[in-house]
Image 1 (cartoon, one colour):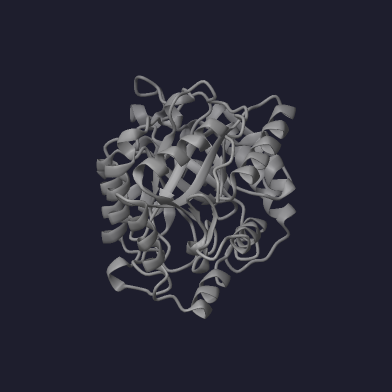
Image 2: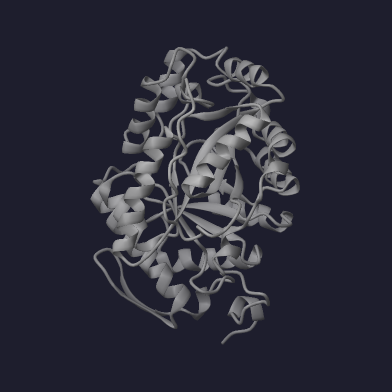
Length: 390
């Protein structure tokens, strides 16, 4: 494989900003291993393990951490985030919220509470997948998500919630649910590939998250989303959710990638992929298509390895290489306009240490809530911050 020319930058909200938000991942949902497809009880998704990963990422200098949501064995996202928030010094939390699980005003209350616990370091990953046990058309799910987002925005930016939609209709005073962040409240991160998802992100969200694909396909997605956002008079930032394996040499990194698959039974891998809630989604189909185009060693382009997708749904590829190669790959994404990266590796705590030692010192890191002007210099004049009733 040969390196391809760097693709031109796509317009984004933070296009004039140097650096990116470098984030890690909390495997809350049955998701940490040292060999793919082989469950090791030492890495189970309990509080002891996942909170240690969060504290480690905070100590190492990661700027955000994705806390996913799933009905698989594991922990509730908001419960975990609230518990770990007081233990973090500087790292943001990106909490996944599946729209419709919680009545929107009470969701606004929970998010405002968490944002105050974090002193404005809350970010939100909007999820529109099926509610556990239900199957609904994607148009229904995205329409519900749109209403939830519009209610949250009214709660955060207006004195009163006055909403008349298809799913929700009510009028409420918004003062009890004001977040710590100002100028629009917590940033909304969103990932979705269907036309309805693209439309929702372009109209309402702040960061468009993508799973790994070839850089040409990522660039096409970014261009589509940017043009759609422009039709609403908006811009968005772009983020990439991808695994990473970095070692002192490329040979060592590739050897570790191979070791992750060394005990995988392919039928077991298929079972793991198909039981995920998003197993039939367009995004997962695109990951499978990418994997089908890879070479015999599962590389689809230089340093993008798809073997990891043999045993997991969703994000199905990893950056693999030595520090110089990984930094160069990240910077090529940055030059395209990507300003947020959510990395992960197996096992998560150990791989965070490798990345922080070998890659992080070579990157300029930022916090997108700070860049977007959401975090006030002084505690805000909200009921929760003041500790009094209005």
